Image (tube, rainbow, N blue to C red; front, side, top):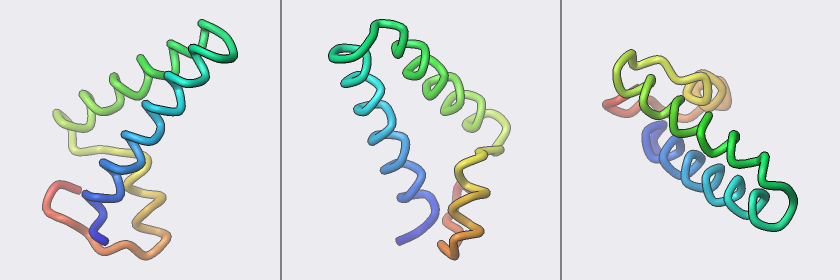
Length: 66
C-alpha cells in the first residue's frame, strides 16, 4: 500500500469515527471533524501532512502526493 492510499484511508476512518463520536457521545466532537477537514485542506496547499510523517516512519513507500 502506498502512502497516499494510507492517508486517504486514515482520513476517511477518522472522519467517520468523529461523526460517530459526535452523534453518540458529545456534540463537541464535531470540532474533531472540523480539524480533520482543515488538515486535509492545508495539506493540499502545502504538501505537509503530519500523518504522512508517521506512516513514512512505519515503512510505507511514498506515493505521488506526499
